[in-house]
Length: 127
Image (tube, rainbow, N blue to C red):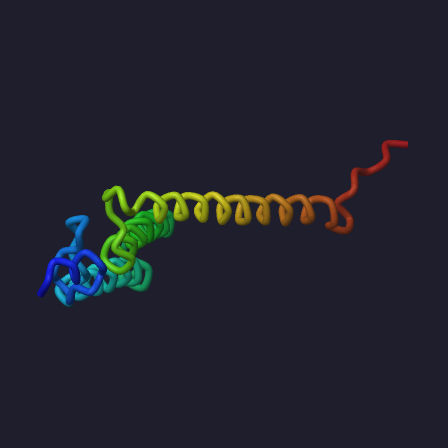
């Protein structure tokens, strides 16, 4: 294969690009899949078995969900610390910020609507 093919992105899987990165491999996808299944099965088993308190199960499920997001980013979206990934990382950070604003804002609005719209919850007049 000519080096021009590699430099222009025409390299087959497993052959490095001009920037030193390799394409995804079947082994990488299988590793990501196995990790994803394990990171899903563990919280499911904890909740369904009832062997741990609910608060612990929720904390473990949230922690493993964060780990699973990282596994998806690394193994399926191929995000790494390479300089060519800086725009992808910037887009990811922007997306996380926007989603956090939407979720926190929605929870805030629902809480305030619940407090202000509940019938019979008005303060009693002291007269």
